Image (cartoon, rainbow, N blue to C red; front, side, top):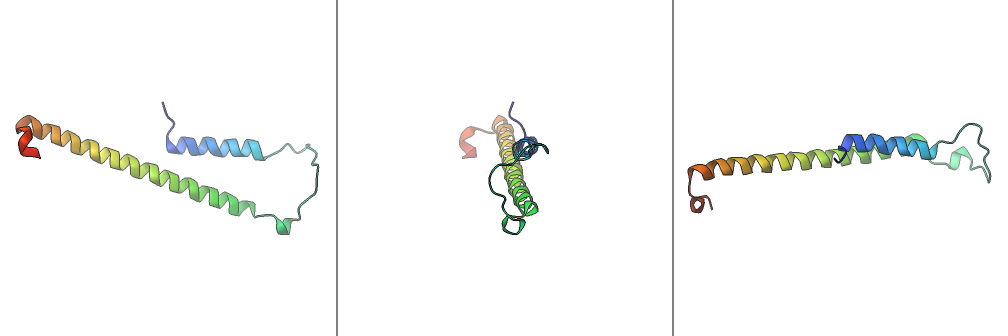
Length: 89
């Protein structure tokens, strides 16, 4: 079974947190970048959430479109039971 869009987003957020955050006692090697030149963490989180929201909107739209086409297909089948197939085209 494929996870829903919301579940996939939550799983992705958890994965990113696990990969990005280091334990407090971990030693840093290399140079330290001053805070003024680093990108804003809140900005990155906001951009990520915007993309996640767009993905969820696309998923919702696709599900809505599929539902609509399934309803139309069911209505057509119901009509086919009553009418000959040549009159539906």
